[in-house]
Image (cartoon, rainbow, N blue to C red; front, side):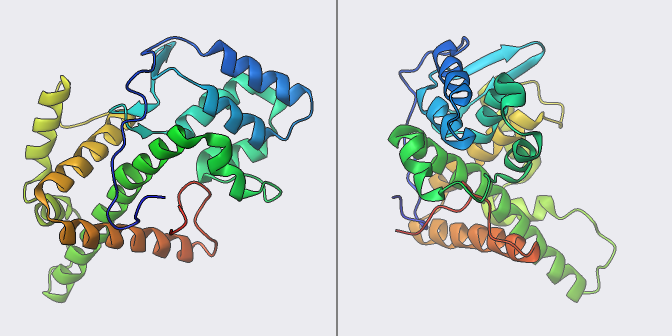
Length: 247
């Protein structure tokens, strides 16, 4: 298991196909569900078999492996749940896709084993590089807001630029411009949800590059603490898949 406070980035899909439907994984999912296998097990087994990095269905592009490293497992879960249709109960499906939760009957200790070593490494990359990175930004924004209020500034409602300066030493506007240029995206100041996750992962790697180990560890702890605070405020533990156990 990777160190919680000094995350390592692992390239997990550099040899995988770049597009096309994973018919074998989908067939496995449908077959195991029809044989009565519990759906979380069937779903994770299908994920472990999945090889496609990106695919486009209708007008929607699915990017499952951000930068070839960060595995967006809930996006793939959405794709597989759509393929499974009514073989997965609607209420349990929504709990997974909106809260990252499997039914209580599922043994969470099986998560890593069923997902497989490479996908689980990619999952950790996504956890630290997207989920924790977003939480870090929120934590710093709250720090900036608290300081502003204590100084008598009660009316400002956007502290993102100052938070970015504290975390990345540059403004969000500057960094978004560089991200779009590097990725070949048109920079109109607004990005899609999938591009937002790519931007978060890009920022994570940028932060790792500009910061020393002590700062990386401190910021990572701050992001994790923010996630725990959010979970506590909702009176339940963090969802499965968003709370890797400490080694």
